[in-house]
Length: 113
Length: 110
Image 1 (cartoon, each protein chain N blue to C red):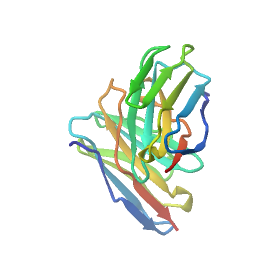
Image 2 (image 1 turned 90 degrees about the horizontal axis):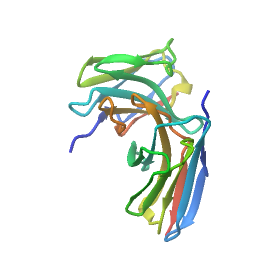
Image 3 (image 1 turned 90 degrees about the vertical axis):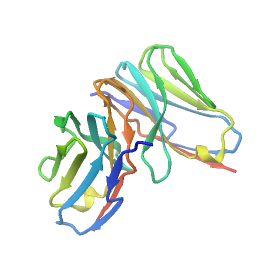
Image 4 (image 1 turned 120 degrees about the vertical axis):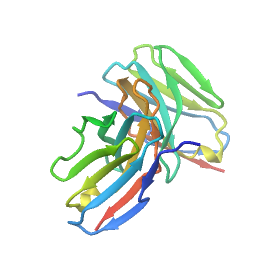
């Protein structure tokens, strides 16, 4: 049963600290997405990659957020320095290019104090 | 920019009742998807619609792709407690680009 995995599931940190979230896409999927979900804004696309290359990161605050795919089995989303307004659930999703279905991970619940 | 409106924002219904929710957009889309998010989990695809006017069913779920390609609705018949969650419409322009609606939060009262 192939699934997208995300670590950590929960993270509490203090303002100013660096936060790194990790995602393992489903094996064989070549497209990876990062979303942020808050009550106020709903689900927002932050960035997505195809074949490990970033295609669109226009939804991401560039000054503090960065997203990378060091290899095909790992995607990372980093926030440095973190701020209270970054508190949200961050989802990773993977899929195949040309296919509409995105498979979501369970999310990382981030709380910045 | 394109606007996506999903309604209602929330619904409280009795078990056994039917549910209807919809999304309207200012833009035309080629595909409409409906996702469900269970509490504490990521969204999961329920139904995909590919053609204007298409009506598709999946068990107790029925969804339609509006003829103008700017809207879609999702119906759930005979609701049960496990239907609780947030339902998102997600129209797609292509190249994996999804736009998510604001969600309809469904509560089913046993």
